[in-house]
Length: 129
Image 1 (tube, rainbow, N blue to C red):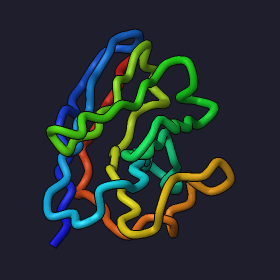
Image 2: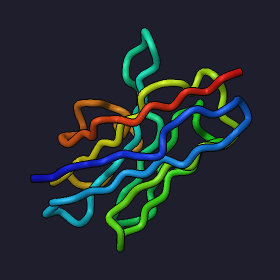
Image 3: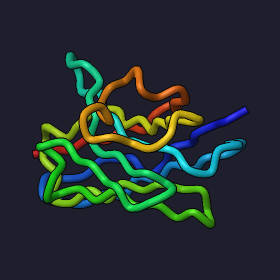
């Protein structure tokens, strides 16, 4: 059974930084797309960033581009989201998602919730002004 466990959320002031981690266990696939999504209060869940574990493709939302960095550590089966210069609008529950057995990420659809078949429980990020 594939499981994703997120950690690293917390409270931070605007302009600060946080690093989220997602550890994958039980995955039979070695090359798949992983992404971070967030759900802010009263809003739909949206894609933040994605990375292909079998290569170097990375994708970012407009709001994350230039401030957040997604990375991976294959030895640890982990994916990270480095969040810099955070803003109050970044507040929300952050979810890790994996596209196991469905190949690489692709530019036109990495942000679609239906593309991912495994989800973590989420970690809360709160940014104060």
